[in-house]
Length: 190
Length: 306
Image (cartoon, rainbow over all chains, first blue to last red; front, top):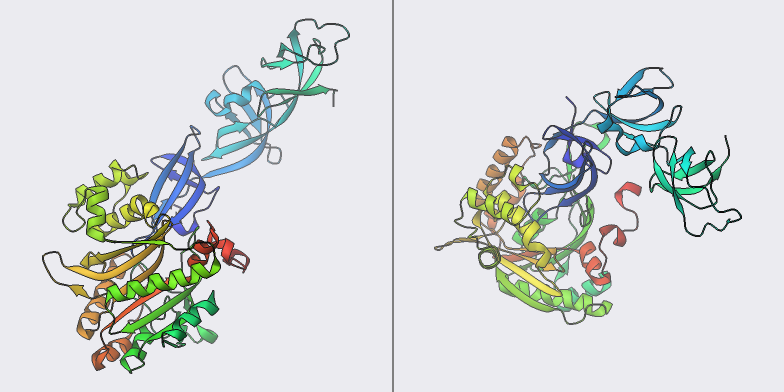
């Protein structure tokens, strides 16, 4: 079993703690003038996203988490699970709602997503930063209003609802920033 | 800063010395890891010093009188906001001085250097015993508190992950000192902490009494440790005993075995005058002088870019 010593700690390192995989966010070495040194770390639980602090005795070893980030293509949703494919090996993987989380609102077939694998299984899925989606439902806008002053809700093909300017119409494609869930611009089919 | 330090000691008739950085022996302290090298692939190990203490004591035993040294020292596995594996130490020894006199001199030197740099004029100074510090601020007696009491103090004070730590009696004190007390030591001034638990004597003499204490001090400025001083142990037999205890500890913790320094033991046996000695981190003094938060701010090229 792979382990890391505290002197290997650095941001991004993936470790196991209390049975959960964590990513080190910040590592600080603390030592009194003489005596025992400590590593005080901020770590993020990769399952829950919660960030907690822990203190380790310097020199101790911690089990490495079998976690890696990879790019996978989203294929389809079978009503329960999301199916992804590795584009080089063509291996298919499935992710549950817990792993897909917020990304479910934004991804559509063919999108390339950043997926974190834990023991070979998807642990979390991140939607691309920007996605282009079609509007399936929105109130008709006012003709001639191109200023974008104010806005209205629009439902997208994935079911997500975003606030769009009044001039944007049903069936149009728009670009959305998935990190903030906000409208960026109108878009053309790529 | 270096010119200022040299002027300070010239004025006080303390002689500057140089001792080897590379040694056939190494420090035994389990909390200090020496960098080991093999010159020319000879299979013969040498160690980079973690402080010039042993050879400087040999000079004292040979009758050098008061001496100081400014040199680079090396400590493996130490890297952080305040730690760098290679750093500059100012170490000096005062035969005939008491620890109190040496604290006076340390305070004078720090003021002399910082006043000149103009950023921290007239630093206030306080001195507090280690036991009193723990008792007044943490309501814990570091001499007598049980392991469970030390542990629950750390948990109660919110040290993250304290409940999962497995530490010995001194380990808990080190945790409490570095996490709960240190940030407030030397706030806007100099705080000397003195009289350490005998188990943390390192190379200091132990004064007997109801609460026997290691005659040792540390100086803190802005919540950062700057210096560590000892009323030096001059008893060769006791020194050998501590070396052996250290080596035993190293074995039990699976740390690298290192050869103790017999030359130091010989020097102590031949007779070293009663001496107070101190080591002061110059990188950190410079951090204090310019208000730096990270040691990299006072280094030309940190180890990752060296």
